[in-house]
Length: 390
Image 1 (cartoon, rainbow, N blue to C red):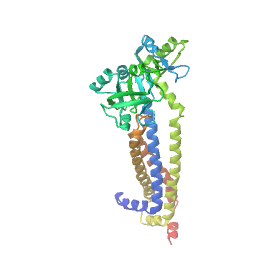
Image 2: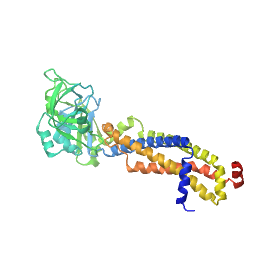
Image 3: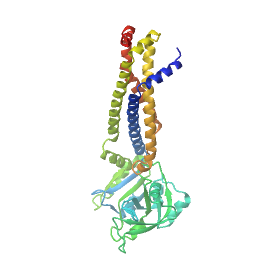
Image 4: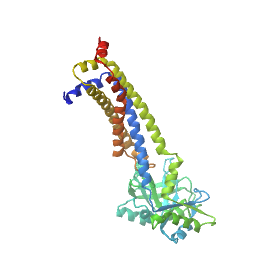
């Protein structure tokens, strides 16, 4: 008998108990939907860590990272061997008018910033406009979309932490560039940069103080030795530094929220174990209900091997249909959530690796779930099966 002629029989058996099949389908679909989402987070998290700049160092105040560093450190660090460039990063903590949400807006040196972070790409006209105008601001696409900002807009931003010499806490800026990046684990589309002198010169207090410094080294392989030289240069200075590679800093942030990969894998394993039990129970019930029919099939000449193959294919077909539906759902959710996750995971997507892994799990689940019921069919005798029918 042709294998193709068995497909109507397989389809009929899959949809035999519609309510039970629907619930099993939903269980598998949900499990693979969860798998798709979690594995997308796991792989995206790893990709983001791999995007960290190997040639960048972050310099913080050793006493407390929130205390900041004197701007004078910038000039001294420039003279240290192995340093290619250094910029201040001063967190402004600004809010848009009528909003109560602080945004990641930093005062820095735009020209050097764009050199140190080449992933922030701007058109030449936007680049020149940003560099030449003290009031200019470059905004990430996520932040621009949130507030409806466009190039050419004049926007007031209110700081929650700083005041100007005139007593106000609002600065006016002109949007000259809107950037969008996908290759950075550190810089975000939900942020903005502006000129440090424009912000700093107008401060009533906290002037000439940067939140932290970013250093670009000439040779990435010597990054750690340059970091040690920086810390040695400012030892016992009253503003001691703690310099770390960008890679180390990013991984430390990851460790603060626990071993993400291990947690995600544990959740995935638990969901698959539960799903395996459900599918195995469904197949076992289906086989018990069809013992007499299996006896008839053996009378008609179906071998045990053919019957076993039918059961395995039936189990895999159900798992694949439901699992692919779950992956499709999770793909839609990941795509929709990518914008919201941009601030935390610049690369958030479901890649081919997740899909291939998911399909492999579907086939493994389908085969394993069918093993016990399939083995039981080998113990069936034609007489016993037909006796049950009678």
